[in-house]
Image (cartoon, rainbow, N blue to C red):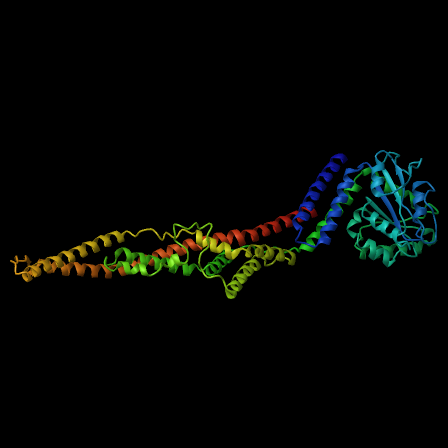
Length: 538
């Protein structure tokens, strides 16, 4: 049952480590480098510790000068290996007492503990093969800076922390603010020992113990038991040895300590990133961005050019044949914009639309910024900055992308209207009728001038047929020209509307590709980061 629980806890730790590492990777470039570096150290430490002996539990004795830490280490280990001294600095190098040495060497090398002993007895009630490593560490308040660095390093590496306090300095601010309060989250693998109780009367011992518990509660360690002991008289040692033996035999302390470290690192990431969620991309925000970009791309100007080109082409194809050529003197509005030409490759050429000036660029910047701010609303400062940065990266090439989208949009400017050929044929018929009538009327005049016989001109309803042909042909041309105007205007509006919709769709595609999708990707990263932090916190 215990082995099954061990495997289950180790598997859960693996998943939490994977989630923490993924969160760290997602936070790169977005969160504080110092926070990410601390998380990386936790991951490295966890990876290394899990690769080393899982059969050993590392218990470190921490304490101030004069607390009797080394004496207590000797009493618990049943040796006299730890040097006992009353003056600073005392303990210089970490000392390890090892039970069950098989597999401990690499672990002690990683801990950087060169001094090692293997007690002959069993350290109280623990078995020799229990896999226990006791460490006697330098004083945390040592005058030697190197000693303090060793203590700080070991406080983050050992599996179980045993804090040895004495009745005189148990409330030392350096201990509580520098270590215990900072390691409050590790309460599950922390034991506090009140040493030298032989110096106290039973009443004083009870009062000091109660005071120490109160101070520990303020540090966030209210659930930690305080074990009163005396290394000199042996009082309380059996209980302390049993506590250490139980921890070593369970072989869960390393996993428990790493789990706490992962939880603390995940909380640190969560605090650095903030806990609020971003509002995300709304349909209204996307539409508003599309409208602003369409304005910047001058979609309306292109649509008007499409309408003008349509009207020009309608006059050229349906106007009076004798005056149609005058239309060619007016330039095609679309061609002036370098659009609607079959000899131009839109993927390689730009339009001739005027370049954006400072007001247009400012409006474009404002549109992109507003879109990003709305999407990032509610997110914490680091993620808002990341979302804005994603939008700004797309903004750099936005003007060129918009121009290319306009150039690539099929405007159907060369497509013929159904009524153009009809009106064109009728115009030519009217012109031919007028010409026939004019020639017919001219022939009798020429014959009469030459004093030649003039044939009679046929009549219809009393009107000469040539005159009817001439007048009817001219009248037909005028009527067709007048009728073509509203048709051309309606067709121009329809053609411009269709072109505007296609242009707006092209601009929307650019907005999606250049602005919306990068912002959306950043929002997905935020969501995945939040989920990874949640899983890492367990």
